[in-house]
Image (cartoon, rainbow, N blue to C red):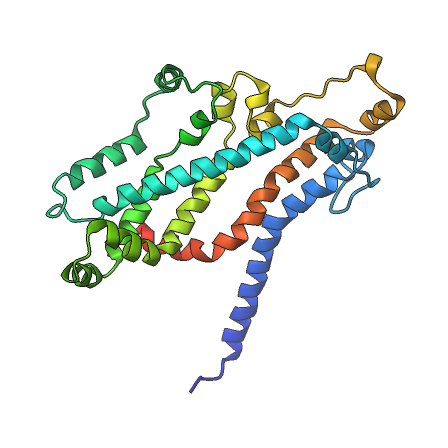
Length: 294
């Protein structure tokens, strides 16, 4: 029988709701503000008159971006980078985490490899050796330089290792009795049971590859190889009045860097906002169970 809630518990529930709504607004309002600024006229945005609604509604900034073929080229480069990079990170993370989740008795070098992983989290080889390695491999201006960068996410590996170690040992023992080998247990036992943590680390990888711009800036020497975030970071509007039509001049005169930047930021956020709801339900469960070893 469920006991009736007291007045104090009801007030606490309402207070909790108010706090959560406030946190949600703090997360949503910056995105909404960016959208409002991107849809406002130049003078209102420059004067700081835009709050939560567009002032002088117009689509000039979006027309400028959508009409730029280089923008879509960079967009699809980022999509390709996310697909390749997230897939590679997923495979490497699983293949590393599975043997490292075993005890030192089953995998004698387990502790050595774990210390090597932790060492890479504390110390970095340096920017110049990293660049020289990429250059010697012939990956400058190559999509694989972007996809392979960060392909061994150590933090994600440790999360998956701890998640695997928390799975009941009896399941593996029963599989061994039935004649299952390591590959069978990994593909048919461990991966299906680890969907929450695998979805979580995949989300980490997707966000990293989509938002990261520095690798594109350093490793891509041609603008047509820039991923989206690098292109946005480097984008400069050059106004050539000599070859500009009257309609183009009017549109650019109504647009400011502030409204254009707001439009670029908002468009760049859309893919992550679309993907996140599908993986969000796994996020807390995967982080909680993968963060500690009982």
